[in-house]
Length: 235
Image: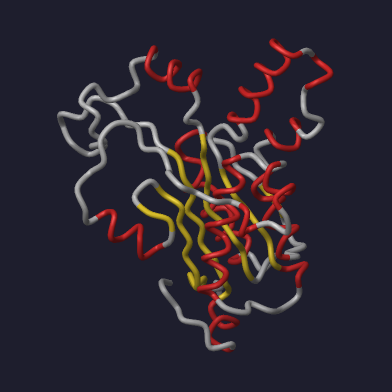
């Protein structure tokens, strides 16, 4: 019999708002103008100390914040940690770190490049950060497939539970690409909307609007979630 999968937690970090309630209220408000940056985001509450936060790229910081909200909403998942995994997608990964360190190398020399650059820019950094923080020792995976990364990650996490390989997964996606070079690249390939409106299903659409953020779900095997009294948000 096919295992059913429940969503028991949701977390979001977005230009519309940080947290699901603020995000929903933001969606119902007037659309922001220009590029969609997340303002006043403080990553330090999601780390053991400020030094750890500084050694983590912005896209992974967003993912940790979204995962924190999702796991808080879900409650104590419990169970075998080796059967609980993390699958976070991203289109690019730590581009902010890469761009910053290229400039450091150019203007200050190779010896000033951060030794943390490589682990900060890797596409699997967000999955790794969540897995290590919460002790989920099952699959720790990443899908790096441009705009489809989040959808594919959720689908892959779902299949791990349906197949019986895992009982719970933290899954979603995160992106932080509001850098000068990335903006220039998308602009020069004429992918950006000329009227600053994101209307993907409109016949008059003319491109997308660059933004940043993270969305994370907690998926659980249905019977396990019901047995522990979890609130089932969706099936």
